[in-house]
Length: 406
Image (cartoon, rainbow, N blue to C red):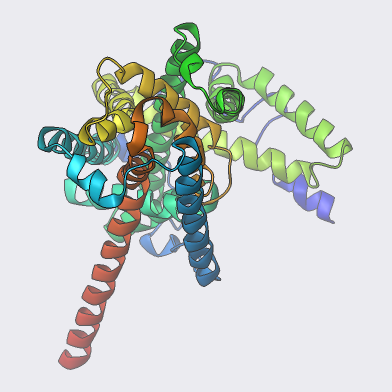
């Protein structure tokens, strides 16, 4: 019975490739925003919020891994600086105003650009930018990505939130998918570029401690992050060949007992591709929005990878002429822990950051890594908590008013 049920999952796909999938992008006739695929019963009520079961366990895990990260941060930093690192008061007194203002501008720029990505995609999909919805969608995604393993919680919550604001389930899914894959593409492209530069120009050679670990983990992380973009691109341009290869790999996995339900895995993989292709057609049909969107994706990732340089600059570290060196080392550190399943890669990324930035941070090493993490991770946790609390207060006020009016 299980085998028959699994086979039914593949009924929507033909034997040669994805049913209805174009052979090339040029053959795809992208639907207009009003022609987005809608399944029967695609109403607001059909999209439910992510399950909150055992949320306290995840919260406890988050606190534990953050504590572990901070412990490893100051512990490893103390070993590298041989106990001569700055105290908190010394770090605060070392901050220079121009550098601090530049750092704040960079952090704000990252937030604005991510919200702008949603505005552009909203315009392409539903014909309206809706900046208020775009901003909150962006922050909610960052928050739930930050508190869930492998950053898996952001997209479901973003889709749910958008449906509560009057966007259909199909349109919400398309918007979030386009933003997600665009961000992944920008992340891996910028990352690969600076890792290649870092090796070819000898930036990584300047790292005295942990150079091999930094490089090996970095390249492994890049390979892992390239799997999804390459998989999607292969299906878009060579659907029949990709279908056959996917089936081959899944069959091998089934024989090795790595894959338990090969038909279900195949159906899930093909559905992911099918969902993306439908979304991809929408933005491709509008080249101006596509270009603006990709510019935002590259700009956001470029600024994000540059944050450590501006942190060190604000702490008055000697970083003149080291912008691309520090940025390249940050890429290695970030990709080197990207496959760690803890929320925000906490517990490991701090230690990797210490190894990467010991080259330039000097006595401010521990605080440079701490403020870097605050700028790209902790700040979104705090903003997410504030949004959650405010939403709860507003909901309680509205409920009381409704009860009073009744």
